[in-house]
Length: 257
Length: 274
Image (cartoon, rainbow over all chains, first blue to last red; front, side, top):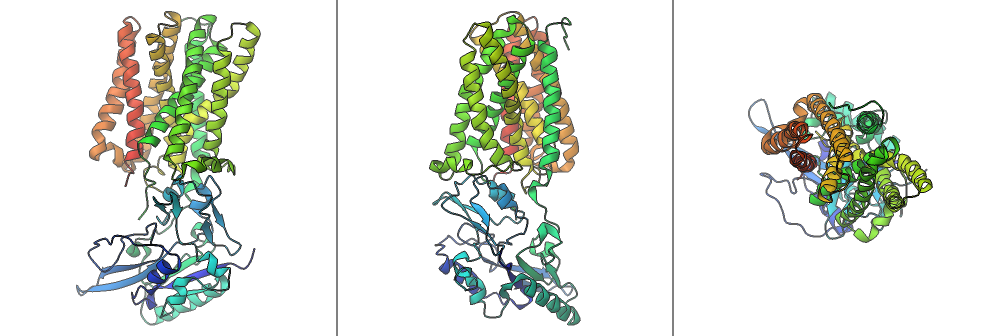
């Protein structure tokens, strides 16, 4: 496997211009959508089958009663332990040699199990193609020596692309700088490869707690309970089977409950 | 900010019919192996019922796909930790078992019967699997309630048993096969399954606590409490005790159990719908 690539989205630098969102749409030919009224500048409310990069406009009340704008360009996290990839029964969702997660559109048959297995609600179903869609990390571009379209278009370097280890080191320094400047809640989200989901290959610098951005504090791999649930099912099968055995067995007379 | 898979009626029906197919097959296999020659009707009806049901299941699963023509892509890989992957394989393998068992159930020779019983014991495992894996599939997603329900698979299995047995009893009544002992035994087996299902359901709700609110309160609550707990389990359980003497009560009981089994899959799946 090649060296892991990553995207680092530093929300402290985001100005909400949505160049990333537009660049993503255009490069990936994602087509038109009906806008949604979200009560603010954000559009759409959430990732769709045609919106892979989404600038979130979060209005956070300040102590003095004003509102602060928290801007965050959100994207598929390309988790090291990806729920969608584990759930995919066709093998259409795969990990590239760069560590990113992509959906092979020629293989996906649209069962939609991945949609409900993403801890971030990223994967979306496209009714026209009948397949699951999400950010590809611009798989075509990274295989041709280019960064993802969103990172390329970002005018403030809020979205940075590079080798994961280098970006994490950079991000850690940036958090220290911001904390020294008085942003006491500045923190990295998903940078720690020993943390949740084995680390995110698209990780973030946030200026507030993850919940403020509607991000889960401690997302979990959805498949973590397969063994326990299966054993409990087997237990149930044994009890049910014994019940049927009791009802049908020949010797022992009538066993009316 | 999580997303529901948008599964609708075809998946609800699949979960329901898959449970019946699995339940009727393992009931048939148990009756075939451990019952008397008078239980042969139960075995035959159970095997023969599971075959068309699993065929319908396959069709329901395929038409629900975004690209139905690519259904065979499910067979590109086998991920043993992934319920959707193992499930797709199991539906196919179980289908083969129901076919072979159905064909063999027409034979009267003793040597074929021995073979059929052995095949039934093996196929029974796939029947149990089909009845329960759909629950494990839901409980291993990222969605709340589904992923909190450790007993979802166990509950679906118990429901598969009660509905499978109710379906066998109903078919036996309608086709007037196995009157007498076989009917009493399938009724008794169904009674046990209903009791087990009630216990598992109580544990399911108790363990979930407030996580069960999508079905225990809100607009699915009347269906859950009235349709599943009341009409689908408690009433048929009471009726089935009467059904030991009055056959019509047993028939009503079987119908209600089937309704309850459908309601269970419906409220669980649809409570997460968009």
